[in-house]
Amino acid sequence: MLVTRPLDPSLDLLALHRLAPARYPVLLESSAHGTAQGRWDLLLATDGDALRLDVDGVVRDHDGHAHAGGFLDALDRAWSALRLPREEPRWPFRGGWALCLAYELAGEVEPVTGYVLDLKQLSDVIHRRVIQDVDHRNLNTDVPWLEGRIPTAENLAVAFWERIRSELPDGLLRTVRLWETDKNWAEVGDNT
Image (cartoon, rainbow, N blue to C red; front, side):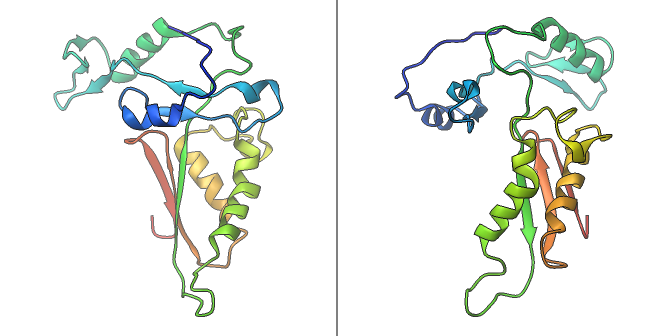
């Protein structure tokens, strides 16, 4: 069920997220300042509903009730029951993911700076080669370098790896890991 409420601008959504991360698992703060989308911050809440595929092969919900069919069928039925119309009129956007991108670098520490790589330089590369193209975009249609790729965590990790690695010294970037949830992630790298 979609619930929208205007909030007092002084309300600290990050504090609420930190206070109860299981209840409020994702906070999306708009980076689109000065646009219609810029007035939207989203704190996603969950009521605790869940589906799991147990070791006995039975799909169960958070109360332990069994669901017929396979996991993906049960997930599709649950999603379809909650799905909103594609053109939800109260939001200036639709869909979206919350992703966490991590990386591992390995190299010699430069004796003068004390860095393997200046993290500001790395941040600039990640922003220029990945973030500026994918942030607040439809990954299926709006990112030319993702054309022809289904935007799964695995495919995105490969694409991000390729784009970041191409701008760094050879061998410095060891891995890129992309999380969709705390339990669902993909890792790409030289030794993965």
